[in-house]
Structures are given as structure tokens and as C-alpha cells.
Image (cartoon, rainbow, N blue to C red; front, side, top):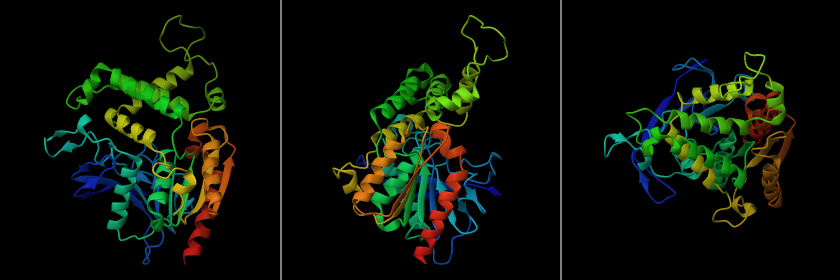
Length: 368
């Protein structure tokens, strides 16, 4: 299935920091058909480095979507039954307004004059898009990692608009360790001389800093077991050490490749803004407790975590489940066994598919 991104422009959006961004554009893709009653819509939400291209083959790049193994006919998010929507988040660099977008007041990219954003701002823009479709309630909101954060924000901020939520490998707020990893990435970018205080759009981008940031991030997405299985201590194209600082180990080569590829598809300033939004996210803000934050939601929940995920460990999902159960909400929780670490939600999909398919079927039946 060949899919193309669409873009909608809104006059303005009010942000959590008290400012207004005007105008604002949002890029999105859709899969399947919206039924006449508009009751089969599902919002799929991407992780940090994702975009609106969640499924099918991109008309622009020819590549499959980041969750193509989960979205499509007969898959977990069955497009024969459901209408699936995915947007690029506010602050991104794949069609939605972000720091690389032109500031209409200056005719130049916003760069670091772009306002600091939050997960709440991202979801507010998504809600504007859903409203423009005439959809009053989403059958489900779902995503992994930062996508799961957005799903939780949807359920808490717009309880009347969400029938069910499926946060996967997610958290209700970043721990000190999670913030620390993001800060290392930001500092790597800002330490690159080519960053030029964010004003690099007509110059050489801070490719070295962004590549290092991606390398650090990618380590956190894998597990010790998966790295041992994939690389071990194998040497790269040689039998002995070089006794230098070129690539010796397979894992070094892999990380350098991942870093170098990332700089071609992602904007360094978007890296700064989106990671900061993730660090600011705390569902308890203004509520005192997690249970109080979820007081108004009547959504059903399917919460999924993975045994080898040390970036978003299972205890964080379990905190969410306890808070929901303390309010007698309908919540199912599963910790899936996987060796793939945080990336499990993208690659280890067999059991995940069975869980999501069954949960959505029962949720849809309850709404009819």
C-alpha cells in the first residue's frame, strides 16, 4: 500500500508556556476508512525519532512505516476494521511545524527562537486535527515510548474523547536517569561548533554532535542480551586489534553507522526540543498524584511493558497500573518477555499483536 502524507494548517495554537504559535501546520497519514458513525478511529502516536509515516510504503521515500508490522489489513491495528491516524509531532522535522520551519515574521527558520513545547502541546495539536475530521471520540490512542506518553496525555487531558488507551513501553514521567541520557545527547549537539547556537540551516549542520547523540540514545534502546547476541566482542573485518582509534569492534561500526544515518533524516534542533518536552512530561503536574491525574478518564487501558527494557523499565508501567486500579478503572497489564530491550515494541510484535487485536475487538464491540 502506497501512502502519502497530508498537511493541515491551523491559524494558531496556544502553548503550555503561555505563548501562541501562529500559524501551525501538522503532517499526518491515514490508513483504512472512517466509518459513517466515525466510531472506528485510532490515533497511533510515534516515538521520539519517528514521524507520521507509521504504515504502508511511503510515496516519498519508498520505505515502510515505523510500525508497519502492526498496522494494516489483518494486523494488530486492522485497517479492514479501523481508521488509523498518525501525525508528526509538534516540534518535529517531517512536515509539522518545528524549529526548522520558516518563521513568517522573519522569513527565516525559527531555529532556537521556536517556543519550548510540551507533550501536552503535541497532543493539543493532534486534538485540533481530530476535531477537524469531525471525530468526537477516538476508539483508541496508542504508541510506544514517547508515543505512550502522548496516549496517556490524551486520556488525562481529553477523557471524553478517548474510549481506550494502549501505552506500550512508556512512562508517566521521566526518571532522573532518563533525563540524564537526554541531557548527554543535547550537550553533544550544542558542543558541536557547527551547531552555531542553532543557526546552521544555511550552513554545515552539527552532524558530529547529532551522530553522537543518536549513538548514546541507541545504546539505551537495546539490551545487554541483544547486544551480546548481535555483536559480542567480534572484530570488524579484521583478526587483530588495530591498536588505534579506528573501528575495531562490530558494535563500534554499528553505532557509527546508526549515528551517521540519523543526521540525514533528523534535525538537530528538533532533537533538543523534543527531548526537552519528554523530560518535562509529568502526568501528576497540577494533580498531586497519578491517581488524581487519571480521575476523570473512563477509558479502558491495555498497558504493555517488556522484561528487558531498562530505559523504560516495567516498574514505571506498573505504577500506572496501580494508579488506575486504585480508581477501579478497566485496566489490563502484561509484561512481555523479550531480549530486544526498549526496541521490543517495534520488533517483537507477535504476542503484542494478539493482545492489541483482542483488546481493540472487545473495545469496539462495547461501543456499538
